[in-house]
Structures are given as structure tokens and as C-alpha cells.
Amino acid sequence: MTLPLLDVLGIAKKYGGRTGCSDVSFALWPGEVMGVVGESGSGKSTLLNCLSGNLVPDTGEVLFNTRCEGMRDTLKMSESERRRLSRTDWAFVHQNPRDGLRMNVSAGGNIGERLMGVGERHYGNIRRQAMDWLGRVEIPENRVDDRPATFSGGMRQRLQIARNLVTGPRLIFMDEPTGGLDASVQARLLDLLRSLVREMELAVVIVTHDLAVARLLADRMMVMKDGCAIESGLTDQVLDDPQHAYTQLLVGSVLQV
Image (cartoon, rainbow, N blue to C red):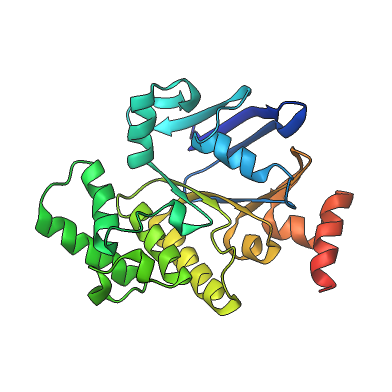
């Protein structure tokens, strides 16, 4: 029997009397993209942070199908095990690339740092891989020694993606990766993400408030409201035939724009 890559069971998180997320469960398979959508305050970012280890949930399990030991609850891993996982099989793409880059280190250094985190020490190999990945994310190779502080917002986000994918992770967490970008830059980034996801057969959990982003990237979609997952299914099915009144409202508000 084939196991999922990620199995999320009953994740819940409260902030005092306020619910961040409540009893959220789903499975994610290799090469699949799960879009988590909802308005601001719906709990989608809290859920993403609980899954990725940035927050500790109050209850629940986050089971990951490791390469050597099968399904492990990442919430019960030691700190060193979680750090190793975040350097190898997991990656996190932040909405603001400043949060995912070292702004005063060169573009090549940002990519090379993650390679060094998995044991690469040969300078020539590191530089070659850095330049290869700059090309793959459409950043001119002659910018390899430039600092991200000199890059545009779209270039910074593409550099953050290169930094995350250079080690060949199996699971990517993305928090509003196109947020704050101009429409033309956003479209270019979405095309890049879609091609990389398919080429590398990545499993992705992507949080977004933009239904167009979910439709373009996600195979399945989960709609959140007040910390609860209120509807889920194949992306086209949810968007074209929403069942829950809140999902209907979300879809209808987009159609009216």
C-alpha cells in the first residue's frame, strides 16, 4: 500500500481564547499541490506554520514519510532531526523574500549556504550549482555576486525559490509566494513555479488568498474559515461547483470583480 508523503491529523492551535486552526486533517501525496485558501484571519497561515515546524500546535500529528524510517511524527522529532529535515527534504518559501534570504550575502552565497548545510564543501561545485539555479529561475548569471538588496521584488522571490530548491527537497511550504508583486511579475513567477513543481515532482502546500493562484497551481484545494477546513476537493471541482456558502461567497466575489 502506497503511503502519503505527508499525513496531517487533527492539527489545532489556539492563541488564548482565539482559535488559530481547529482539527485540520488531510493527506498529501508525492508530486501533489494542495492549495489552502481563505480570507485574512481564516487560519491558513497558522496551519502552514504548524505543519512546517514554525509553530507548535496544541494537538495533532504531522506525519512525514521519511526516506529511511517511513512515517515519522515531525512534532516528536528532536530539534536536530527537524533542522536536518528543513535543510534536506523540506523547504519554506516566505511571502516576503527578506524573511527567506540573507540580504547582505551575495545571490550565489545564498544558494551556496543551503548546499553547505547538506555537506557540500567544494567551492567550484557550489558556484556551478548556484549559477545553474540562477539560470533556472531566470536571474542573469552575472548577478551571482550581487546582493539581494540590489534586486527587484520579483528577482528576490525567484532567488528565494532557487535557494530552497537547490538541495532537491520533496516537500515545499509556500506562504503567499506571489503576494505584493505586480500582476505581470506575479504571472511570470507563477509560470516558473508551475514548471518547477512539475519538473521536480514536488509536493507543495501553498497558502493563498488568491483563487486564481490556487486554480493555476493546486491539484486539490482546502477552504478555511475561522480556523476550520470547511470544504475540500479537486481544485476545479471546488471552484466551479462550490458547496459551502462561504466558498460560494469567495468564488462569487472574484467573478464580480
